[in-house]
Figure (cartoon, each protein chain N blue to C red):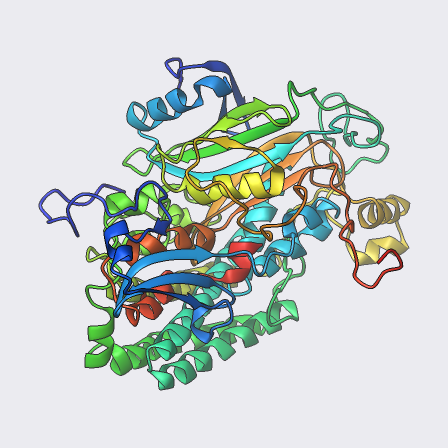
Amino acid sequence: MTYEGVPGLVETVEAHGETTLVVDPARLIEACTHLRDAEGFNFLSDISATDYLGWGSVGVSGYIGTARGRDLNLPATQGLQVLPQAKSKRFAVNYHLLSVSDRPRRVRLQAWVDDGEAVSSVVGVWPTADWHEREAWDLMGIPFDGHPNLKRILLDDDWEGHPLRKDYPIGGEPVRFSEEE
Amino acid sequence: MATAPAKTRAPIYEGTRIPHPIPTVLRVSDELRATGDVMTVNFGPNHPSTHGVLRLVVDLFGEDVVGLEAVVGYLHTGFEKNMEQKTWWKAITYPERIDYLSYQNNELVFVLAIEQLLELETPPKASWMRTCLCELNRIHSHLVWLGTAALELGAISMFWYCFREREQILDLFEMVTGARMHTRYFQAGGLAEDIPRGFYPEARKFVEWMPHAVDDYEALVDRNKIWLERTQGLGLLSADDAIALGQSGPVLRASGVDWDLRRVQPYLSYADCEFRVPVHHEGDVYARYRVHMEEMRESTKIIAQCLDRLEGMEGEPWIADDRKVVLPPREELHTSMESLIHHFKIVTEGYRVPEGEIYVTVESPRGEMGCYVVSDGGPKPWRVKFRAPSFVALEATATCMTDALIADMIAVVGSLDTVMGEVDR
């Protein structure tokens, strides 16, 4: 299965039986419309945003195994340190598409953005994107251009920050009746 | 196989009813607002019929619902952020607690994601037992749905009958795993413990009884005039709108789309099971009720097939033999230095999962449960994201409530079968 005709296609990655299409965020709407109309991906399963801040820095990498791969039941097979592959930008926005048809198949569409860069909203392509995009804005701080109702969904309207970002402190919520008050 | 609605069948309604421009908000027209007779009512978040803490801001014109917006987030507890701080095997306890009715299916989707990243194979006995427990869990979830949804429409006795069988299922869970809820029985590689021998006869008793129990429920409401009038023709959702709104599970199948992940992309042992996927074409609350009832019967059949297989697997391994991921057998710790080291490393540091990303989906009782996992090769997940079917189901509230009365809202929201813990995560 090839997706040569997808507008703005940068790269196609095959791993674990899944196809990932990395697309240019500027041409996201075109790519989504093409996938829906020409390839039959009528069902948007999920939108997941990932923050790669600190990815591959000291202390996060390491893979148990040998150069040939993971060796079963043998001692002393750890120690091979492989740094994870560097990422081009800080955030990845993943669109998990599904074709509800006689030929069921899935594909992942991936767009890379930096902090503050907006992604076009796909609510016009799949209406279900509405809440998924609001969630990505709320928890990860990805702005979506052209979303009809982009406001926080899971957190309070006056919440500060986006908790699923890697630089959001854990336990950083101010406590009432503390000394500072 | 899955198809769009049959060509010969008349559509549930013409065109689309998805509100524009915001697909999840029903807006009051300016003319209607100008009459001054539109009243805005806040419904929830603490209301017994909201299945948790769901808030609906409803605009009423008389008894007609003319505007509606669902407000969620009252149960948000940051599961996904928490899981990033835990080692892989400790994080398995979290997805169960997201949806407190379908814990085994949620646990499964995360464990499957770990296994696919590790390229770890599970022994057949574990696969069949997982299938068996997931189907028990589906019946359990449907029973709680049926009991509470009927209770909200006034059929109080239904609740007691449903919880009678639910107790039997919880007893089975307790027997196998030691816990009645949030069982934490699936490990990466298989099961946490071997299946106790007393499980099979007790499960057999349940399988024999369950069809009669479904008969009981149907006798209570199936031809009950109040039930029929309060469910038929309400909360309409066409097949095209259901797909556009990302609906899955019983809601999608009640709109006439023949779609079940257990059959279109079989996981576990579903490919070797014989079962029927119930589909109804009315797209209303009653159709969703029927799909739930028939699914309970089909799940019972699957459990019987699982028990047939499992009874012949006495003595077979229940977890993969991979010492880098799976805890060594307890008795080896006294005799083998390597086992002791492996045990210590897995318990303290946790196992490492190769770098990569994966999106795994299973058919949970509520529909397509997805789990997106990113690993950087370390002992903790880099990112975990759940695609919660309940979250998506609530997006359809505005579409289903087009031209409905305020009293119908209880039936419609109930029929979408949402668990607020899963919506807010």
